[in-house]
Amino acid sequence: MNKELIPSVIVGLVSLMSLIRFALTKNWEFIFYVLAVMIFFYSVIRSDKIFNYPRIAIWGLAAWVVMHMAGGVVYIKGIRLYDFILISLVGEPYNILKYDQLVHFFCYIVIGLLVCSITKKYFGKMDGVKIIILILIVLGTGTFYELLEFGTVVMLASTGVGGYYNLILDLFFDLIGATIGVLIGKRIS
Image (cartoon, rainbow, N blue to C red):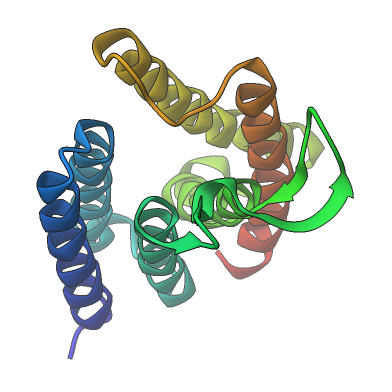
């Protein structure tokens, strides 16, 4: 059995269930996100033949998809999981540590692993400058995703992505995750 089969089935089922839920509730924002995530996951699975991603990265990506979809579907005490404060480390207006921030952190650890796999044959031995470049590449993917979220704000009347604090905190947790992901990727790639 190939390493992508079970994670692909999980992502397919969770994405399908999420699409149905979001279609029934007319949540166009999350329908867009589900489609974007499915395209990204499919691209990673297709490119695995070229880059031979670590098994942990494929499973991590599948776990992130589940976490991401749950963030928009699950409610705890009437609060959407993405808005749920896991541990109140810093209060208003930052609200650290929310589920959303944990998902960003986790996602960019995984993307750091993927990017290390893609670049290992081009970068050779990893030194400080190459590590910084890889972290910036991973952050570029985070910035791209935030631009997609901004597009939903522009195209849809109301969205749940938050304002400037949310944007900057997303990128901050992306940076922490990217740094850890690249450092782990340096060791295992």
